[in-house]
Amino acid sequence: MQLTGNLLIGQESVFGSNGAIKAVNASTGAAIEPAFGGATLADLDRACALAWTAFDVYRETAPEARAAFLETIAQNILDIGDDLIERCMIESGLPRARLEGERGRTVGQLRMFADVVRNGDFLGVRIDPAQPERKPLPRVDLRLRHVGVGPVAVFGASNFPLAFSVAGGDTASALAAGCPVIVKAHSAHPGTAELVGRAVQKAVKDCGMPEGTFSLLFDSGRDVGQGLVADNRIKAAGFTGSRGGGTALMKIAAARAEPIPVYAEMSSINPVLLFPNALKNRAEGIAKAFVGSLVLGAGQFCTNPGLILAVDGPDLETFIAAASAALNETAAQTMLTPGICKTYQSAVSRAAGHEGVTTAARGVEAKGENQGQSALFVTTADAFRKSHELQEEIFGASSLVVRCPDLATMLALVESLEGQLTSALHIDEADHADARGFLPALERRTGRILVNGFGTGVEVGHAMVHGGPYPSTADGRSTSVGSLAINRFLRPVSYQDLPDALLPDALKTDNPLGLNRRIDGKLQLAK
Ligand code: NAP
Image 1 (cartoon, rainbow, N blue to C red):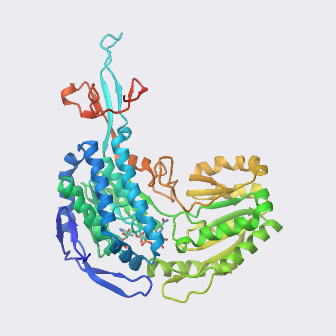
Image 2: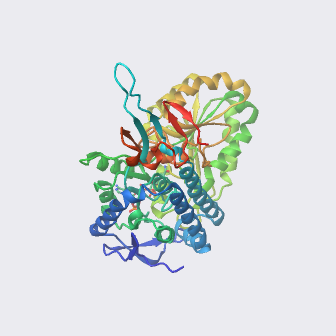
Image 3: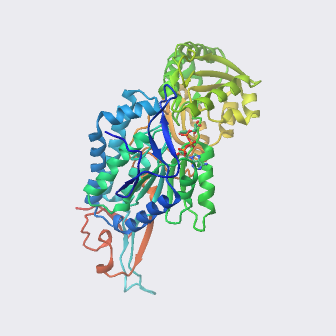
């Protein structure tokens, strides 16, 4: 499929005149064709105007029509075929199998949200019927449903060029909620973005959705991304990337005349806690599994296990030796962008040079361009407590083991951690009592707590939380993965004493949409 380098503004396809960017071949560092025209502020304005006009029509589309639209996007993405995988491999350096899996996840997410829309529970319908005879005062008729918040700005993530980019989780959940979407493409994978963007644009047309339901902008600088979040027609934003980028957007959103939420997923080191009995019985096995998780995708996962906490002693020595032996064998892998690779290399050099840190192991040295060599460091609880920088995310296959004198110190270190996406406990049955003592501290600062596993591999489902207190995300009350992600882009509206003729279908007395509803607080299932 021929790439044009064009912006997609509603149904328009136009070359942006604000400079141009080219993608870079992640494995060679060479620029690749074609050029992608950067959006001007006039392009941004047109996309926002179209999205605003589309909003009232799109949010009232019937559930079946909206679900079919999401499924059409999924099918159109599959219809691109191998061109999508090949372009994405070049732009991201990620291997075919990973990207084919990621495409499956992307399509699966869209279909899951189609089911969520059809089911209708996301509308959260509640009806408190009028009680005209109530004494001393009659009760009004109150009905509640959720509506989309308005047009949403989505920033594609570099590390998930399909599942968290143009038609990824943020876009799918916003569209499911009834919100038009304007995507600011990540400059690391503009070709992938265009291919997927055209699949969405075509679905808008084929399904008869309003033109402004979707636009895709390329940005040669920061103007368009920041301009989007500042525009008063945008009512929320979804972002995955650096803490610097996320907090810059949060500040802009908070400074607006009408502040809006930015759902930014930023940085997390995902502590792994090794409890004494598990360590005694299974140190080598845990070490091998840990290294497998650490180097997956060159370590470029937000759920990468960046911190190991354990009580010092011979069992921890066995763990460190086995992890080092496994890590020594790991090949250097191509990273997503030269910038990310450079940031990784300097963060690893800084850790290696830290006076309280020793290098336990390095992976096989990088031979090609833009490759990250994995790293394992060890420190003491004392050094970790004194050096806040050791808590900072190193985006790539690097992790730090902290030797704790006892479990009380390990718990104190957990209490000193920032908000996290995941935390993992490795326990045997004899560790249950100790592990229970850690749960309150972990619940306070983690979105997902898991046992005898690692946080990489995020299941897309109904009970998944991929979120966590700041700075892992901007708003720890939400998730960006799973069906609950739709809640970020909804707000409740209550209707008091509206005649049936004026009520939206979701709230009409005879329940034409067949929704489950709470009547006077009691769940009433649709027949
Ligand atoms: P990034 O630099 O934060 O970029 C993400 C997106 O936000 C891009 O579209 C970027 O625009 C835009 N952006 C960044 N800073 C901005 C700002 N100040 N104002 C407006 N827009 C801004 O993230 P990245 O390129 O994906 O990776 C860089 C670093 O982010 C990594 O080294 C890693 O530390 C971190 N990261 C973390 C995660 C995670 O899940 N925790 C995931 C990915 C990256 P451009 O396209 O123009 O650059």
